[in-house]
Length: 180
Image 1: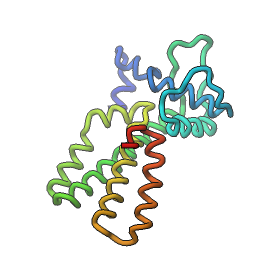
Image 2: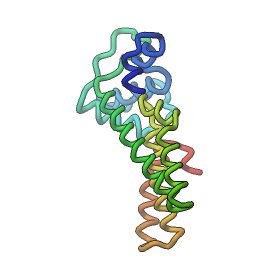
Image 3: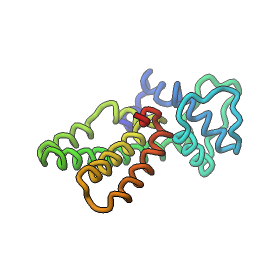
Image 4: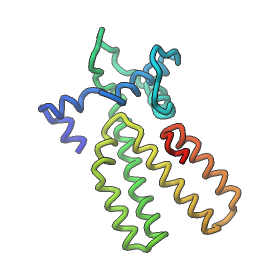
């Protein structure tokens, strides 16, 4: 999907080669983090962990300077590394979903759940964008495994509970609905 999208010369390809909406907000905040300032002229309405992490990557691989009065932000060079990382997180998430399904309902259900997670259109599409959903999904699925370990009383419950808290903390900084 990502390779086909990047070679598309039509309107979809044009949109894919530019940062719009939330992607642009993440890029703006990440550029400010990379510049060493958190001074904001506008409110940042998203949870900050994803944009802050992208900002750390921008410190290592600076994005190209913005053209004056830019209305559309071109992709930064680090964007490819982010996309590759997000696709790898998506693969890990599909494997963990398969394991979760196997643990709860058996190997056939686990295999089907893993295949459905791997072929999920929204997951594939958002992994190719500068968006936090892939990271949040991976944290949630890992958290579900740890929670299931606690419920099944598998070894050292205090350590599992601490680990669950350490996973859900960053989860809240990625997606506010993790509070639920």
